[in-house]
Length: 153
Image (cartoon, rainbow, N blue to C red; front, side):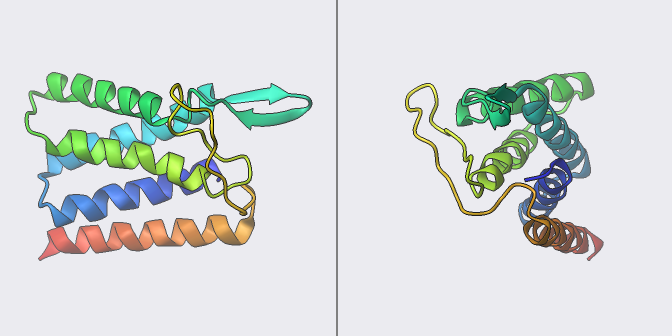
């Protein structure tokens, strides 16, 4: 999927689940920041040119890589802010891993269990499918609204 789709969907997911677990605003802010950074970083380092095509590298689009990057960035921000607790870690991890879920919907797929398996999970939706991208972005916006409504009550 497109980068904007990844960001809209993952931020929505983080805010929705943050609302459901009553995460405090600092934990939520850390998780949203990490989620955006991870989505950008995974695509920045994870696309390779092969035979004239751009493909996703197995290592960068794996549960192991996304988890390490998400948790390390969260730990760094939590340390800098003096923030404790499990909430920012869980929410950042959720936001980062959603990148893999969306990319698994595409024919190129992802190898989530790399380095233990190179088997790719694939779907039928092209990464640049306008309807799919806009639909997932709108779902992300709806999740943002639902998450924020929780905090408004």
